[in-house]
Image (tube, rainbow, N blue to C red; front, side, top):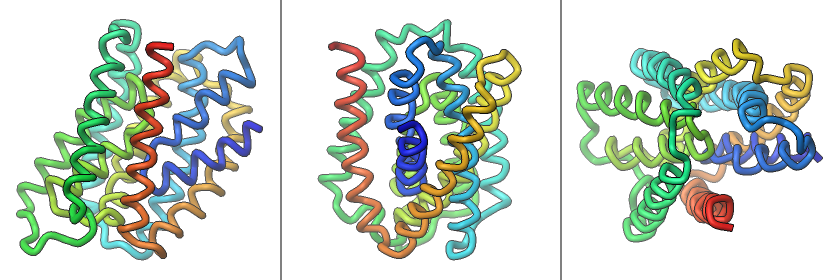
Length: 248
């Protein structure tokens, strides 16, 4: 059951992000005594393997601005580690509803702007703007990844598509690089503090890689329209899942 969930999470993460919504509840169900931070750390191990695989798959077909994205990944690693360290300091009763409001806003925006992410902008952004957007998004969303996690890739894709005029497939490829960094940062902190089940994480990583290969290839084959539909579905599921977790 856990391996199937890890594979499904790898597929979702590779396309639009949000795989943590599948794997974290499954991990807590299969191992009910596991601490939430340990579940998060173990998930990060699997997610890193799948995300790195997706990067390699996308990079074969999509032009990658490595000189901008790699530093973005480093920024995300630092802020994600800080976020993981600050989990106990955050009022989750306030934080989760804020995330839900943002997600609802994202769903409304994408629905009302059907052309966003389907084609590249007519006038490409300047290099300075790309650097600024990637740096800010990496820092802020990396922090979120360390604090909570699910939907990190989704937020990155929306940010890149909206602010840089990038179509969804290229935005997904860019997001994977930054997401790799945030996964590394959170995993290093959680591993150092004893919150990773390495054996279980290794098995989940293999399944996650398989899902990531299929997901990234489907995104490349089916294009931006497919990614947009999956993104909207994942955002709605995230809102429902977080709402259930918060208010049920």
